[in-house]
Length: 611
Image (cartoon, rainbow, N blue to C red):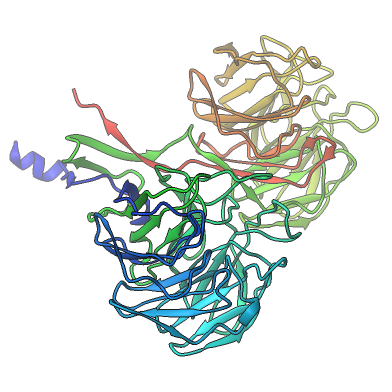
Protein backbone atom coordinates (compact mmCIF):
# COMPACT_ATOMS: atom_id res chain seq x y z
CA UNK A 1 0.00 0.00 0.00
CA UNK A 2 2.77 2.43 0.89
CA UNK A 3 4.52 1.66 -2.40
CA UNK A 4 1.34 2.47 -4.38
CA UNK A 5 1.00 5.73 -2.50
CA UNK A 6 4.58 6.66 -3.36
CA UNK A 7 3.95 5.96 -7.05
CA UNK A 8 0.42 7.32 -7.51
CA UNK A 9 -0.19 9.60 -4.53
CA UNK A 10 0.70 13.23 -3.91
CA UNK A 11 1.41 15.23 -0.78
CA UNK A 12 -1.00 17.90 0.41
CA UNK A 13 0.76 20.92 1.88
CA UNK A 14 -0.19 21.91 5.43
CA UNK A 15 -0.62 25.66 5.96
CA UNK A 16 -1.46 27.66 9.07
CA UNK A 17 -3.76 29.99 7.13
CA UNK A 18 -5.41 30.26 3.71
CA UNK A 19 -3.38 31.25 0.69
CA UNK A 20 -3.80 34.84 -0.51
CA UNK A 21 -3.24 36.98 -3.60
CA UNK A 22 -0.78 39.23 -1.74
CA UNK A 23 0.53 39.92 1.74
CA UNK A 24 -1.69 43.00 1.81
CA UNK A 25 -4.83 40.97 1.09
CA UNK A 26 -4.31 39.12 4.40
CA UNK A 27 -4.59 42.45 6.23
CA UNK A 28 -7.31 43.30 8.74
CA UNK A 29 -8.17 46.26 10.93
CA UNK A 30 -8.43 45.82 14.72
CA UNK A 31 -9.26 48.19 17.55
CA UNK A 32 -6.44 50.01 19.30
CA UNK A 33 -6.35 52.23 22.38
CA UNK A 34 -8.33 55.49 22.50
CA UNK A 35 -6.74 58.93 22.38
CA UNK A 36 -7.04 60.94 25.59
CA UNK A 37 -8.65 63.75 23.55
CA UNK A 38 -11.16 62.99 20.80
CA UNK A 39 -10.22 65.06 17.77
CA UNK A 40 -10.35 65.41 14.02
CA UNK A 41 -7.88 66.81 11.45
CA UNK A 42 -5.12 65.25 13.55
CA UNK A 43 -1.55 64.61 12.34
CA UNK A 44 0.08 61.22 12.91
CA UNK A 45 3.50 59.63 12.37
CA UNK A 46 5.44 56.55 13.42
CA UNK A 47 4.37 52.90 13.23
CA UNK A 48 1.55 50.91 14.83
CA UNK A 49 3.50 49.98 17.98
CA UNK A 50 5.15 53.41 18.38
CA UNK A 51 3.18 56.36 17.02
CA UNK A 52 2.55 60.01 17.71
CA UNK A 53 -0.57 62.20 17.30
CA UNK A 54 -0.32 65.99 17.17
CA UNK A 55 -2.46 69.01 16.25
CA UNK A 56 -6.15 68.73 15.40
CA UNK A 57 -9.42 70.28 16.47
CA UNK A 58 -11.70 69.21 19.28
CA UNK A 59 -13.43 71.53 18.24
CA UNK A 60 -10.88 74.24 19.13
CA UNK A 61 -7.31 73.94 17.86
CA UNK A 62 -4.96 72.00 20.12
CA UNK A 63 -1.20 71.87 20.78
CA UNK A 64 -1.38 68.56 22.66
CA UNK A 65 0.82 65.67 21.59
CA UNK A 66 0.18 62.04 22.48
CA UNK A 67 2.40 58.97 22.15
CA UNK A 68 1.18 55.42 21.44
CA UNK A 69 2.96 52.26 22.63
CA UNK A 70 0.81 49.75 20.79
CA UNK A 71 -1.93 49.63 23.42
CA UNK A 72 -2.46 53.04 25.03
CA UNK A 73 -1.90 56.76 24.43
CA UNK A 74 0.04 59.05 26.82
CA UNK A 75 0.08 62.84 26.73
CA UNK A 76 3.56 64.32 26.56
CA UNK A 77 5.34 67.53 25.40
CA UNK A 78 3.07 69.90 23.45
CA UNK A 79 3.96 71.11 19.96
CA UNK A 80 4.91 74.79 19.59
CA UNK A 81 2.10 75.97 17.27
CA UNK A 82 -1.49 74.73 17.24
CA UNK A 83 -3.04 73.76 13.92
CA UNK A 84 -5.12 71.30 11.96
CA UNK A 85 -5.00 69.38 8.67
CA UNK A 86 -1.22 69.27 8.55
CA UNK A 87 1.11 66.39 7.66
CA UNK A 88 3.39 64.11 9.62
CA UNK A 89 6.11 61.57 8.91
CA UNK A 90 9.07 59.86 10.53
CA UNK A 91 9.35 57.77 13.68
CA UNK A 92 8.47 58.26 17.35
CA UNK A 93 12.10 59.23 18.07
CA UNK A 94 12.67 61.18 14.84
CA UNK A 95 9.38 62.72 13.72
CA UNK A 96 8.30 65.67 11.59
CA UNK A 97 5.06 67.67 11.39
CA UNK A 98 4.52 70.37 8.76
CA UNK A 99 1.89 72.61 7.18
CA UNK A 100 -1.69 72.89 8.32
CA UNK A 101 -3.91 75.81 9.21
CA UNK A 102 -3.19 78.46 10.51
CA UNK A 103 0.47 77.53 10.96
CA UNK A 104 1.78 79.55 7.96
CA UNK A 105 4.02 76.75 6.72
CA UNK A 106 5.71 75.99 10.04
CA UNK A 107 7.73 72.77 10.32
CA UNK A 108 8.57 71.13 13.65
CA UNK A 109 11.00 68.31 14.35
CA UNK A 110 10.65 65.79 17.21
CA UNK A 111 13.69 64.05 18.75
CA UNK A 112 11.81 61.80 21.15
CA UNK A 113 11.59 64.34 23.96
CA UNK A 114 11.28 67.87 22.56
CA UNK A 115 9.88 69.84 19.59
CA UNK A 116 12.06 72.26 17.62
CA UNK A 117 10.89 74.67 14.94
CA UNK A 118 12.93 74.23 11.76
CA UNK A 119 12.67 75.68 8.23
CA UNK A 120 9.26 76.95 7.11
CA UNK A 121 7.60 75.75 3.92
CA UNK A 122 8.03 77.99 0.85
CA UNK A 123 4.37 79.01 0.86
CA UNK A 124 4.79 81.16 3.96
CA UNK A 125 1.64 82.99 5.02
CA UNK A 126 -0.29 81.30 2.20
CA UNK A 127 0.75 77.80 3.26
CA UNK A 128 -1.81 75.13 2.54
CA UNK A 129 -3.81 72.85 4.69
CA UNK A 130 -5.08 69.44 3.50
CA UNK A 131 -1.97 68.59 1.50
CA UNK A 132 -0.84 65.06 0.62
CA UNK A 133 2.59 63.91 1.69
CA UNK A 134 4.98 61.22 2.84
CA UNK A 135 8.65 60.38 3.25
CA UNK A 136 10.87 60.60 6.35
CA UNK A 137 12.08 63.18 8.88
CA UNK A 138 14.95 64.16 6.58
CA UNK A 139 13.32 63.64 3.18
CA UNK A 140 9.61 64.51 2.99
CA UNK A 141 7.22 65.83 0.36
CA UNK A 142 3.99 67.85 0.30
CA UNK A 143 1.71 68.38 -2.69
CA UNK A 144 -1.59 70.08 -3.48
CA UNK A 145 -3.67 71.50 -0.67
CA UNK A 146 -5.95 74.43 -0.01
CA UNK A 147 -4.27 77.81 0.51
CA UNK A 148 -7.23 80.03 1.37
CA UNK A 149 -10.10 79.73 -1.10
CA UNK A 150 -8.22 78.00 -3.94
CA UNK A 151 -6.92 74.51 -4.69
CA UNK A 152 -3.22 74.03 -5.29
CA UNK A 153 -0.88 72.13 -7.65
CA UNK A 154 2.23 73.23 -5.75
CA UNK A 155 4.68 70.55 -4.59
CA UNK A 156 7.64 70.89 -2.17
CA UNK A 157 10.49 68.66 -1.01
CA UNK A 158 12.13 68.73 2.46
CA UNK A 159 15.84 67.81 2.61
CA UNK A 160 16.22 67.77 6.38
CA UNK A 161 16.87 71.50 6.75
CA UNK A 162 14.83 73.40 4.15
CA UNK A 163 11.93 73.18 1.69
CA UNK A 164 12.28 73.56 -2.10
CA UNK A 165 9.54 73.95 -4.69
CA UNK A 166 9.55 71.24 -7.36
CA UNK A 167 7.44 70.38 -10.39
CA UNK A 168 3.72 70.97 -9.88
CA UNK A 169 1.00 68.34 -9.88
CA UNK A 170 -0.95 67.89 -13.11
CA UNK A 171 -4.26 68.20 -11.23
CA UNK A 172 -5.41 70.90 -8.82
CA UNK A 173 -6.51 69.15 -5.65
CA UNK A 174 -6.70 69.13 -1.88
CA UNK A 175 -7.47 66.56 0.83
CA UNK A 176 -5.82 63.82 -1.24
CA UNK A 177 -4.21 60.71 0.25
CA UNK A 178 -0.41 60.59 0.14
CA UNK A 179 2.23 57.90 0.69
CA UNK A 180 5.70 56.90 -0.50
CA UNK A 181 9.03 58.72 -0.54
CA UNK A 182 10.48 61.78 -2.31
CA UNK A 183 11.66 59.72 -5.30
CA UNK A 184 8.43 57.72 -5.55
CA UNK A 185 5.70 59.76 -3.93
CA UNK A 186 1.98 59.17 -4.52
CA UNK A 187 -0.96 61.58 -4.39
CA UNK A 188 -4.25 59.70 -4.71
CA UNK A 189 -7.80 60.97 -5.24
CA UNK A 190 -8.99 63.99 -3.18
CA UNK A 191 -11.10 67.04 -4.07
CA UNK A 192 -10.78 68.90 -7.37
CA UNK A 193 -12.21 72.21 -8.68
CA UNK A 194 -14.53 73.98 -8.75
CA UNK A 195 -13.68 75.16 -5.26
CA UNK A 196 -16.48 74.54 -2.78
CA UNK A 197 -17.99 71.79 -4.92
CA UNK A 198 -18.38 68.22 -3.68
CA UNK A 199 -16.46 66.88 -6.68
CA UNK A 200 -13.89 64.17 -6.01
CA UNK A 201 -11.32 62.85 -8.44
CA UNK A 202 -10.13 59.24 -8.73
CA UNK A 203 -6.92 60.48 -10.38
CA UNK A 204 -3.54 59.31 -9.01
CA UNK A 205 -0.15 60.93 -9.65
CA UNK A 206 3.36 59.66 -8.84
CA UNK A 207 6.52 61.78 -8.40
CA UNK A 208 9.84 60.27 -9.56
CA UNK A 209 12.13 62.91 -8.11
CA UNK A 210 11.72 65.34 -10.99
CA UNK A 211 8.17 65.22 -12.41
CA UNK A 212 4.64 63.98 -11.77
CA UNK A 213 3.02 61.31 -13.95
CA UNK A 214 -0.61 60.21 -13.92
CA UNK A 215 -1.12 56.52 -13.21
CA UNK A 216 -3.99 54.09 -12.54
CA UNK A 217 -7.07 55.62 -10.87
CA UNK A 218 -8.37 54.41 -7.51
CA UNK A 219 -11.62 52.40 -7.52
CA UNK A 220 -13.52 54.80 -5.23
CA UNK A 221 -12.87 58.56 -5.28
CA UNK A 222 -12.43 59.84 -1.74
CA UNK A 223 -11.10 62.84 0.16
CA UNK A 224 -9.81 63.43 3.71
CA UNK A 225 -8.65 59.82 4.13
CA UNK A 226 -5.41 58.11 5.10
CA UNK A 227 -2.49 56.71 3.16
CA UNK A 228 0.49 54.49 4.01
CA UNK A 229 3.19 52.44 2.33
CA UNK A 230 5.41 52.76 -0.71
CA UNK A 231 5.58 52.49 -4.50
CA UNK A 232 4.92 48.75 -4.69
CA UNK A 233 2.95 48.23 -1.49
CA UNK A 234 0.64 51.08 -0.51
CA UNK A 235 -2.83 51.50 0.95
CA UNK A 236 -5.37 54.28 1.19
CA UNK A 237 -8.21 54.06 3.69
CA UNK A 238 -11.25 55.80 5.19
CA UNK A 239 -12.18 59.32 4.01
CA UNK A 240 -15.25 61.16 2.77
CA UNK A 241 -17.22 59.77 -0.20
CA UNK A 242 -20.24 62.08 0.05
CA UNK A 243 -21.46 63.94 -3.02
CA UNK A 244 -23.18 66.85 -1.29
CA UNK A 245 -22.30 66.35 2.38
CA UNK A 246 -19.80 64.41 4.46
CA UNK A 247 -20.23 60.64 4.28
CA UNK A 248 -17.62 58.69 6.23
CA UNK A 249 -16.01 55.74 4.42
CA UNK A 250 -14.48 52.52 5.72
CA UNK A 251 -12.93 51.25 2.47
CA UNK A 252 -9.31 50.18 2.12
CA UNK A 253 -7.55 49.98 -1.28
CA UNK A 254 -4.17 48.36 -2.01
CA UNK A 255 -1.61 49.59 -4.56
CA UNK A 256 0.78 46.93 -5.93
CA UNK A 257 2.70 49.22 -8.27
CA UNK A 258 0.26 48.96 -11.18
CA UNK A 259 -3.33 48.51 -9.95
CA UNK A 260 -5.69 49.09 -7.03
CA UNK A 261 -7.55 46.30 -5.19
CA UNK A 262 -10.16 46.68 -2.47
CA UNK A 263 -9.20 45.02 0.83
CA UNK A 264 -10.85 44.61 4.25
CA UNK A 265 -12.94 47.56 5.49
CA UNK A 266 -12.27 49.44 8.71
CA UNK A 267 -14.52 48.82 11.71
CA UNK A 268 -15.43 52.52 12.01
CA UNK A 269 -15.96 54.69 8.94
CA UNK A 270 -14.25 58.07 9.42
CA UNK A 271 -12.59 61.04 7.69
CA UNK A 272 -10.25 63.90 8.72
CA UNK A 273 -8.13 61.30 10.55
CA UNK A 274 -4.48 60.96 11.48
CA UNK A 275 -2.35 58.25 9.89
CA UNK A 276 1.13 56.75 9.91
CA UNK A 277 2.59 56.81 6.38
CA UNK A 278 5.28 54.11 6.96
CA UNK A 279 7.08 53.93 3.58
CA UNK A 280 9.69 51.58 5.08
CA UNK A 281 7.14 48.94 6.14
CA UNK A 282 4.88 49.22 3.09
CA UNK A 283 1.25 48.17 3.44
CA UNK A 284 1.93 45.70 6.27
CA UNK A 285 1.60 48.32 9.02
CA UNK A 286 -0.62 51.38 9.51
CA UNK A 287 -2.48 53.23 12.24
CA UNK A 288 -5.70 55.24 11.79
CA UNK A 289 -5.99 57.88 14.51
CA UNK A 290 -9.11 59.74 15.65
CA UNK A 291 -11.06 61.62 12.99
CA UNK A 292 -14.69 62.55 12.40
CA UNK A 293 -17.76 60.35 11.75
CA UNK A 294 -18.93 63.26 11.70
CA UNK A 295 -18.56 63.79 15.47
CA UNK A 296 -14.99 63.78 16.79
CA UNK A 297 -13.74 60.34 17.81
CA UNK A 298 -10.90 59.14 20.03
CA UNK A 299 -10.73 55.59 18.69
CA UNK A 300 -7.78 54.21 16.75
CA UNK A 301 -7.54 51.20 14.45
CA UNK A 302 -4.49 49.12 13.69
CA UNK A 303 -3.83 47.57 10.25
CA UNK A 304 -1.76 44.39 10.22
CA UNK A 305 -1.08 41.60 7.75
CA UNK A 306 -0.55 37.90 8.36
CA UNK A 307 2.89 36.76 9.48
CA UNK A 308 2.47 33.61 7.35
CA UNK A 309 1.83 34.13 3.65
CA UNK A 310 1.58 31.65 0.78
CA UNK A 311 0.55 33.01 -2.61
CA UNK A 312 -2.78 31.82 -4.00
CA UNK A 313 -2.50 29.46 -6.97
CA UNK A 314 -5.49 28.35 -9.03
CA UNK A 315 -6.08 24.61 -8.59
CA UNK A 316 -3.95 24.39 -5.43
CA UNK A 317 -5.03 21.82 -2.83
CA UNK A 318 -3.84 22.16 0.78
CA UNK A 319 -4.76 21.46 4.39
CA UNK A 320 -5.50 24.46 6.65
CA UNK A 321 -4.34 23.38 10.10
CA UNK A 322 -5.96 26.40 11.73
CA UNK A 323 -9.48 25.60 10.56
CA UNK A 324 -8.89 21.81 10.32
CA UNK A 325 -10.13 21.69 6.71
CA UNK A 326 -8.95 20.63 3.28
CA UNK A 327 -9.09 23.53 0.79
CA UNK A 328 -8.91 24.00 -2.97
CA UNK A 329 -8.32 27.29 -4.81
CA UNK A 330 -10.87 27.94 -7.54
CA UNK A 331 -12.53 30.83 -9.38
CA UNK A 332 -15.23 32.41 -7.26
CA UNK A 333 -17.87 32.73 -10.00
CA UNK A 334 -20.74 33.87 -9.49
CA UNK A 335 -19.38 36.52 -7.13
CA UNK A 336 -17.22 38.58 -9.49
CA UNK A 337 -17.43 42.28 -10.33
CA UNK A 338 -17.58 44.52 -13.41
CA UNK A 339 -14.77 46.98 -14.14
CA UNK A 340 -14.40 49.66 -16.81
CA UNK A 341 -12.38 48.73 -19.89
CA UNK A 342 -11.30 50.71 -22.97
CA UNK A 343 -14.08 52.40 -24.94
CA UNK A 344 -14.73 51.54 -28.58
CA UNK A 345 -14.17 54.09 -31.35
CA UNK A 346 -17.77 53.90 -32.58
CA UNK A 347 -20.95 54.17 -30.51
CA UNK A 348 -23.44 51.54 -31.66
CA UNK A 349 -26.29 49.30 -30.61
CA UNK A 350 -27.82 46.07 -31.89
CA UNK A 351 -24.32 44.89 -32.78
CA UNK A 352 -22.74 41.47 -33.11
CA UNK A 353 -20.12 40.39 -30.62
CA UNK A 354 -17.97 37.32 -30.09
CA UNK A 355 -14.73 36.17 -28.52
CA UNK A 356 -13.39 36.38 -24.99
CA UNK A 357 -12.63 38.96 -22.33
CA UNK A 358 -9.15 39.59 -23.79
CA UNK A 359 -9.84 38.94 -27.49
CA UNK A 360 -13.20 40.11 -28.83
CA UNK A 361 -14.80 41.37 -32.04
CA UNK A 362 -17.54 44.01 -32.47
CA UNK A 363 -19.37 44.78 -35.71
CA UNK A 364 -22.54 44.58 -37.87
CA UNK A 365 -24.40 47.24 -35.94
CA UNK A 366 -27.22 49.64 -36.55
CA UNK A 367 -26.02 52.27 -39.04
CA UNK A 368 -22.43 51.01 -39.44
CA UNK A 369 -20.25 48.37 -41.15
CA UNK A 370 -17.34 49.29 -38.87
CA UNK A 371 -15.53 46.35 -37.23
CA UNK A 372 -13.29 46.64 -34.17
CA UNK A 373 -11.01 44.11 -32.46
CA UNK A 374 -10.22 44.11 -28.70
CA UNK A 375 -6.87 42.77 -27.43
CA UNK A 376 -7.52 43.02 -23.70
CA UNK A 377 -6.47 46.66 -23.37
CA UNK A 378 -7.68 48.61 -26.43
CA UNK A 379 -9.94 48.47 -29.50
CA UNK A 380 -8.55 48.73 -33.05
CA UNK A 381 -10.56 49.41 -36.21
CA UNK A 382 -10.08 46.75 -38.89
CA UNK A 383 -11.73 45.93 -42.24
CA UNK A 384 -15.46 46.60 -42.43
CA UNK A 385 -18.02 43.91 -43.13
CA UNK A 386 -19.63 43.87 -46.60
CA UNK A 387 -23.33 44.56 -45.95
CA UNK A 388 -24.52 47.08 -43.37
CA UNK A 389 -27.14 45.48 -41.14
CA UNK A 390 -28.03 45.09 -37.47
CA UNK A 391 -29.47 42.58 -34.98
CA UNK A 392 -27.59 39.64 -36.50
CA UNK A 393 -26.85 36.17 -35.15
CA UNK A 394 -23.18 35.60 -34.29
CA UNK A 395 -20.52 33.39 -32.77
CA UNK A 396 -16.84 32.47 -32.84
CA UNK A 397 -13.66 34.28 -31.85
CA UNK A 398 -11.86 37.53 -32.70
CA UNK A 399 -9.92 35.73 -35.44
CA UNK A 400 -12.69 33.41 -36.73
CA UNK A 401 -16.23 34.76 -36.40
CA UNK A 402 -19.56 34.37 -38.16
CA UNK A 403 -22.34 36.93 -38.56
CA UNK A 404 -25.65 35.81 -40.06
CA UNK A 405 -29.03 37.33 -40.88
CA UNK A 406 -30.06 40.76 -39.68
CA UNK A 407 -31.99 43.74 -40.92
CA UNK A 408 -31.25 46.25 -43.68
CA UNK A 409 -34.59 47.58 -44.91
CA UNK A 410 -35.97 44.08 -44.60
CA UNK A 411 -34.96 40.79 -42.99
CA UNK A 412 -31.97 39.15 -44.70
CA UNK A 413 -30.26 35.76 -44.62
CA UNK A 414 -26.79 37.10 -45.51
CA UNK A 415 -23.91 35.29 -43.78
CA UNK A 416 -20.38 36.67 -43.53
CA UNK A 417 -17.25 34.89 -42.29
CA UNK A 418 -14.37 36.73 -40.57
CA UNK A 419 -10.90 35.15 -40.93
CA UNK A 420 -8.96 37.57 -38.75
CA UNK A 421 -8.42 40.19 -41.44
CA UNK A 422 -11.41 40.32 -43.85
CA UNK A 423 -15.10 39.48 -44.11
CA UNK A 424 -16.27 37.13 -46.88
CA UNK A 425 -19.87 36.44 -47.89
CA UNK A 426 -20.76 32.74 -47.69
CA UNK A 427 -24.00 30.74 -47.97
CA UNK A 428 -27.17 32.43 -46.69
CA UNK A 429 -29.48 31.25 -43.94
CA UNK A 430 -32.40 29.12 -45.12
CA UNK A 431 -34.81 31.64 -43.54
CA UNK A 432 -34.11 35.38 -43.67
CA UNK A 433 -34.47 36.81 -40.16
CA UNK A 434 -33.29 39.38 -37.64
CA UNK A 435 -33.33 40.04 -33.87
CA UNK A 436 -30.75 37.35 -33.20
CA UNK A 437 -29.87 36.22 -29.70
CA UNK A 438 -26.30 35.27 -30.59
CA UNK A 439 -25.34 31.65 -31.07
CA UNK A 440 -23.49 28.73 -29.53
CA UNK A 441 -20.41 27.18 -31.09
CA UNK A 442 -17.67 28.32 -33.46
CA UNK A 443 -17.30 29.80 -36.94
CA UNK A 444 -17.24 26.26 -38.36
CA UNK A 445 -19.97 24.72 -36.19
CA UNK A 446 -22.60 27.18 -34.93
CA UNK A 447 -26.22 26.86 -33.75
CA UNK A 448 -28.60 29.84 -33.95
CA UNK A 449 -32.23 29.94 -32.86
CA UNK A 450 -35.30 32.20 -32.82
CA UNK A 451 -35.52 35.56 -34.50
CA UNK A 452 -38.13 37.57 -36.34
CA UNK A 453 -39.16 35.72 -39.48
CA UNK A 454 -38.93 32.31 -37.82
CA UNK A 455 -39.42 32.73 -34.10
CA UNK A 456 -38.72 29.11 -33.11
CA UNK A 457 -36.53 28.03 -36.04
CA UNK A 458 -33.07 26.64 -35.29
CA UNK A 459 -30.33 26.35 -37.93
CA UNK A 460 -26.96 24.63 -37.79
CA UNK A 461 -23.83 25.83 -39.63
CA UNK A 462 -21.26 23.18 -40.61
CA UNK A 463 -18.61 25.51 -41.97
CA UNK A 464 -20.14 25.60 -45.45
CA UNK A 465 -23.93 25.74 -45.30
CA UNK A 466 -26.95 26.03 -42.99
CA UNK A 467 -29.37 23.19 -42.14
CA UNK A 468 -32.66 23.39 -40.25
CA UNK A 469 -32.72 21.33 -37.05
CA UNK A 470 -35.19 20.99 -34.15
CA UNK A 471 -37.01 24.19 -33.15
CA UNK A 472 -37.05 25.97 -29.82
CA UNK A 473 -39.97 24.98 -27.58
CA UNK A 474 -40.87 28.66 -27.15
CA UNK A 475 -40.42 30.89 -30.19
CA UNK A 476 -38.96 34.34 -29.40
CA UNK A 477 -36.56 37.09 -30.41
CA UNK A 478 -33.73 39.14 -28.81
CA UNK A 479 -32.98 36.77 -25.97
CA UNK A 480 -29.45 35.69 -25.17
CA UNK A 481 -27.85 32.58 -26.69
CA UNK A 482 -24.32 31.41 -25.96
CA UNK A 483 -22.09 28.38 -25.46
CA UNK A 484 -18.67 27.16 -26.57
CA UNK A 485 -19.95 24.15 -28.50
CA UNK A 486 -22.50 23.45 -31.24
CA UNK A 487 -23.61 20.44 -29.17
CA UNK A 488 -24.15 22.33 -25.87
CA UNK A 489 -25.83 25.74 -25.75
CA UNK A 490 -28.36 27.82 -23.86
CA UNK A 491 -31.10 30.26 -24.94
CA UNK A 492 -32.42 32.62 -22.24
CA UNK A 493 -35.26 35.13 -22.07
CA UNK A 494 -36.45 37.04 -25.13
CA UNK A 495 -39.54 38.86 -26.34
CA UNK A 496 -42.13 39.35 -28.39
CA UNK A 497 -42.22 42.90 -27.00
CA UNK A 498 -41.79 44.99 -23.87
CA UNK A 499 -43.12 44.53 -21.25
CA UNK A 500 -44.00 40.94 -22.28
CA UNK A 501 -40.44 39.66 -21.86
CA UNK A 502 -39.95 35.92 -21.49
CA UNK A 503 -38.52 34.00 -18.52
CA UNK A 504 -37.81 30.78 -20.45
CA UNK A 505 -34.45 28.99 -20.32
CA UNK A 506 -33.77 26.20 -22.84
CA UNK A 507 -30.72 23.95 -23.21
CA UNK A 508 -29.41 22.55 -26.51
CA UNK A 509 -27.82 19.06 -26.39
CA UNK A 510 -26.77 18.74 -30.01
CA UNK A 511 -30.14 17.41 -31.12
CA UNK A 512 -32.99 19.24 -29.41
CA UNK A 513 -33.97 21.99 -26.99
CA UNK A 514 -35.14 21.16 -23.43
CA UNK A 515 -36.87 23.58 -21.06
CA UNK A 516 -35.18 24.07 -17.69
CA UNK A 517 -35.19 26.60 -14.81
CA UNK A 518 -36.85 29.92 -15.68
CA UNK A 519 -35.47 33.37 -14.95
CA UNK A 520 -37.12 35.10 -12.00
CA UNK A 521 -37.90 38.10 -14.21
CA UNK A 522 -38.48 38.17 -17.95
CA UNK A 523 -35.93 40.13 -19.95
CA UNK A 524 -34.63 40.64 -23.49
CA UNK A 525 -31.73 42.25 -25.40
CA UNK A 526 -29.20 40.96 -22.87
CA UNK A 527 -25.54 40.18 -23.32
CA UNK A 528 -24.45 36.64 -22.63
CA UNK A 529 -21.26 34.65 -22.17
CA UNK A 530 -20.09 31.24 -21.01
CA UNK A 531 -21.33 27.69 -21.45
CA UNK A 532 -24.55 25.75 -20.93
CA UNK A 533 -23.35 24.80 -17.42
CA UNK A 534 -21.58 28.00 -16.32
CA UNK A 535 -22.64 31.31 -17.82
CA UNK A 536 -23.73 34.91 -17.36
CA UNK A 537 -26.40 37.19 -18.76
CA UNK A 538 -26.19 40.95 -18.25
CA UNK A 539 -28.04 44.13 -19.11
CA UNK A 540 -31.56 44.46 -20.50
CA UNK A 541 -33.55 46.82 -22.55
CA UNK A 542 -35.75 48.70 -22.46
CA UNK A 543 -36.21 49.70 -19.66
CA UNK A 544 -32.44 49.46 -19.37
CA UNK A 545 -30.78 47.80 -16.38
CA UNK A 546 -27.32 46.66 -15.36
CA UNK A 547 -28.62 43.47 -13.77
CA UNK A 548 -26.34 40.43 -14.07
CA UNK A 549 -27.34 36.81 -13.43
CA UNK A 550 -25.11 33.75 -13.18
CA UNK A 551 -26.09 30.25 -14.36
CA UNK A 552 -24.56 27.16 -12.70
CA UNK A 553 -26.25 24.55 -14.85
CA UNK A 554 -29.44 24.37 -12.81
CA UNK A 555 -30.26 27.76 -11.23
CA UNK A 556 -29.94 31.51 -11.81
CA UNK A 557 -28.40 33.84 -9.20
CA UNK A 558 -28.37 37.64 -9.28
CA UNK A 559 -24.89 39.11 -8.81
CA UNK A 560 -23.01 42.41 -9.35
CA UNK A 561 -24.62 44.94 -11.70
CA UNK A 562 -23.01 46.64 -14.68
CA UNK A 563 -21.93 50.23 -14.02
CA UNK A 564 -23.80 51.42 -17.13
CA UNK A 565 -27.34 50.12 -17.51
CA UNK A 566 -27.92 49.14 -21.15
CA UNK A 567 -29.11 46.49 -23.58
CA UNK A 568 -28.54 45.37 -27.18
CA UNK A 569 -24.76 45.34 -26.87
CA UNK A 570 -22.08 42.94 -28.03
CA UNK A 571 -20.59 40.33 -25.72
CA UNK A 572 -17.93 37.63 -25.46
CA UNK A 573 -20.33 34.73 -25.99
CA UNK A 574 -17.75 31.97 -25.85
CA UNK A 575 -15.71 32.91 -22.76
CA UNK A 576 -16.53 29.49 -21.29
CA UNK A 577 -17.46 30.08 -17.64
CA UNK A 578 -19.27 32.48 -15.33
CA UNK A 579 -15.87 33.77 -14.17
CA UNK A 580 -15.26 36.20 -17.03
CA UNK A 581 -17.15 38.20 -19.64
CA UNK A 582 -16.94 41.32 -21.80
CA UNK A 583 -19.90 43.59 -22.65
CA UNK A 584 -19.44 46.44 -25.12
CA UNK A 585 -21.48 49.15 -26.83
CA UNK A 586 -25.24 48.84 -26.52
CA UNK A 587 -28.18 51.16 -26.12
CA UNK A 588 -28.60 53.19 -22.94
CA UNK A 589 -30.61 56.27 -22.20
CA UNK A 590 -30.35 58.47 -24.23
CA UNK A 591 -28.69 56.44 -27.05
CA UNK A 592 -25.90 54.20 -28.31
CA UNK A 593 -22.69 53.99 -26.23
CA UNK A 594 -18.97 53.29 -26.62
CA UNK A 595 -18.76 51.79 -23.13
CA UNK A 596 -16.93 48.50 -22.48
CA UNK A 597 -17.04 46.61 -19.17
CA UNK A 598 -15.17 43.46 -18.13
CA UNK A 599 -16.43 40.93 -15.58
CA UNK A 600 -13.91 38.98 -13.50
CA UNK A 601 -14.20 36.56 -10.59
CA UNK A 602 -11.43 36.35 -8.02
CA UNK A 603 -9.61 33.20 -7.02
CA UNK A 604 -10.98 31.92 -3.69
CA UNK A 605 -10.21 29.13 -1.27
CA UNK A 606 -13.10 26.69 -0.86
CA UNK A 607 -13.47 23.90 1.66
CA UNK A 608 -13.38 20.35 0.31
CA UNK A 609 -15.98 18.09 1.90
CA UNK A 610 -14.42 14.77 2.85
CA UNK A 611 -16.66 11.77 3.58
